[in-house]
Length: 325
Image 1 (cartoon, rainbow, N blue to C red):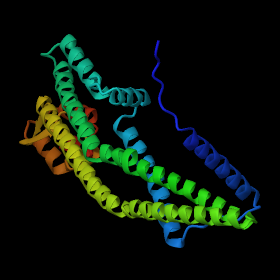
Image 2 (cartoon, rainbow, N blue to C red):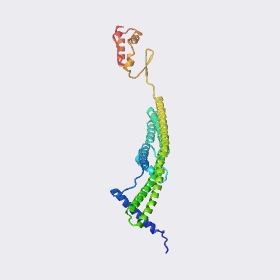
Image 3 (tube, rainbow, N blue to C red):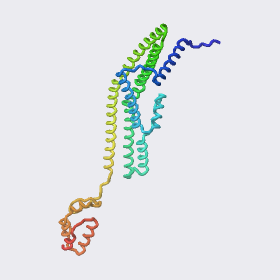
Image 4 (spheres, rainbow, N blue to C red):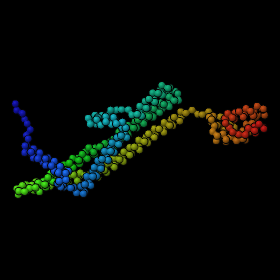
């Protein structure tokens, strides 16, 4: 039986293993401080530092935004898994929608013809509208803000990290070649080491330019992130305005459902039948009260009945005037 095995290049395999060992030795010596290392120029260091800061804060912003949009961490993990397996997210009810359903059901049980039942149904319908506004806000925010930022992290930042790793490998190879040149004693060994050094230097310079170009592109990415931020703010403004409109409409509907208070007519003026305040009761001066007494015939029991009536309404005035009349 013939078995087709892949063709292995033993020479390349041995060479790669030797390069790996050389890098490990070089890195160990750098950690111990027994050898020198090639430092990146100041401009490259600034670009690399800005890239690290951008990556860190972008990850935090995305994570915090998703926590605001979907407070339940279990739901966030579930949505993440469905995204990875490329399936649609499950349709789940929000807390507002659960509250809406309970209010509507309770209003039906209490009685749709009763004031409390009607108010519960109206409030439940408003909560349903708020829940739908919330779903739209979450979906729109994901499209215009969190998804572009996450795409930046999964795409551009990962590419930059990969190229920086390759550059660090080239630097280790370059420094290892420099050390071999220093240690080479024979003329033949020195020529071979210098040739390897020139090749390593060229590869390092080429990789350095590629990485710099990618790091410079972060400025363009941040300009794009600014546009996404503006879109997210506009989405928030629209969402809160919709919520405010729904609640104001609910407030107007509930106000129309309230029954008017009973009113008491005194001296051709309407007064609320509820417990009068001290300010409104003090507005009833003694002249008005005297008018009440003078409009009828003198009766010995009138002043007593009127006094009792006024005491029931907590009206403070001088009753001696009534007694005198």
